[in-house]
Length: 292
Ligand code: G1P
Image (cartoon, rainbow, N blue to C red; front, side, top):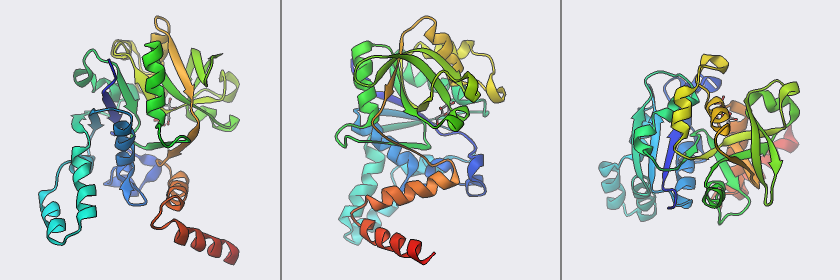
């Protein structure tokens, strides 16, 4: 059975991006002209996902509005004959079946994921962080699709892994394990935000997961961990005692828009790749760099 469901947690405060995120959800921050979370939903759709649950909380209504249809806007674009834009706008609310769940309190990523339990039921599912864009080196195959291929072969949970610099391991969930073929790793260790000296590797969990539904059982058993929150990585540590788990070192790039510098870098890099503005942006950057 192919995996058709995805959960996207998008309830976090976005404190690293204040004051912009005081009323604007960080997941709605645009990369060029498209909200980050729409990039994430597109990755799902291109990977064969048809049903998506977005977990939201206070101050996140703009996400719901973005994915619902807007008949007034559509009529206006139709009247003006702006067919290209009209099709783009229609697609946002029709490309997948999108549902919403409400996380009452900010109790951590593990708690946010558990809000998806009723939606997921007893099926395997994908989990994608709503503030992270992953670009695959293979334009035909998004990273999530590559992870789903590993899941379909192994029938065990899979996480995306990215090598980070030593001084950054304490910001991520870090995985250790044994290398198999094709950039796949059989995991034997996971630790959330370790100090550099206790990290088993420099392989960081990169905001994409495919889970067997048993993860909900382990989240329910997980006590509060780092930051007094229910950490998803801690639930995965419990799951690893009874289930196999794999990592995919993906060939591609991760863009984390949740902090200022990375947000600006993301806009520049993905802006340069755009047909409509890429050349002008490149010319502009060359000019200001030589001027300063
Ligand atoms: C979360 C996860 C962490 C993962 C990271 C990826 O941390 O807990 O394991 O490496 O996302 O971006 P957060 O960034 O929410 O603190």
